[in-house]
Length: 120
Length: 209
Image (cartoon, rainbow over all chains, first blue to last red; front, side):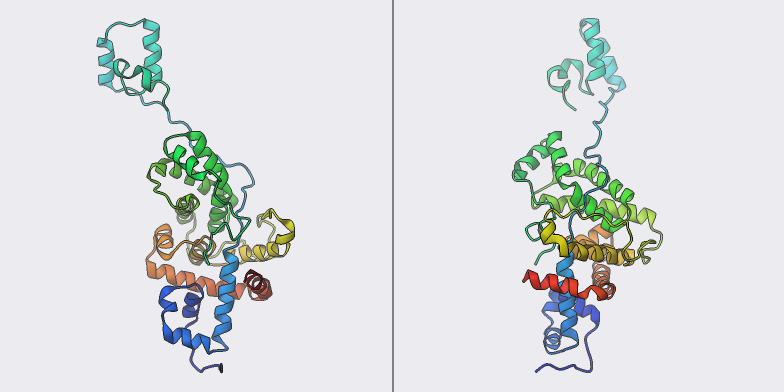
């Protein structure tokens, strides 16, 4: 037999219960009241149905394409010590050395030619 | 029942068939793999951002910020659903913008009237099945816009996107108790706002059983 009782739990407790809140679900006074109350049970059912629908809201395509990936970072510029090291390095074909200094990152010419030139 | 389960809603992006492999390549520095993931999930990210922010330009900014953060953080991705990881990042990026641009968290969006034209076209992939549903979705999204920002954020993250209390608390930089209260009040307010469309979501629930 169900009935409408004179005192009801706070509606926020009903909202918690409808959302599967563990505290609410394990509150036997609350669940017993709801099971037997013609005022509260429909509210909980409605809140649960609403929540079900919210879970179905679709993804939304943006109106214009988004920028998907950050720009490639600029190669790091060598520090002062690195410049001095290169000046003191064994002579290479002048043109090649200049190109490499521009393209290669912090790793030095002597150490890092093969591996680093192509890396981002 | 879990929210944000692509198996339950055909209009949410499901994982790529080879997603584990793509994620592994993205983690190893393969930019094409990363781009593929972002392209795949951009509607998920944009959708969450739009529901939090209510403005298409801000939502696009938030999603793009999220992609940058994801790029920086992908080395730290430890598994679990990639979509969920990316949506958490998107929630944080959205909340950063929300905090910067909204002065009073207890106000709703300024143009939040029922049925306004700027609601997104949900673009249902299965028109027949979704015909009745898209009306419900429009009303739900309109009603969400009428919630105060703090309640809207909490309900969107928890009930639309399936985040737990702790995740919502982290994304909104709020205490757990505050989050719970906002979620519960938001649900109650949403029920009030959706009162005239009660049959739509009750029918949906019946069909779903």
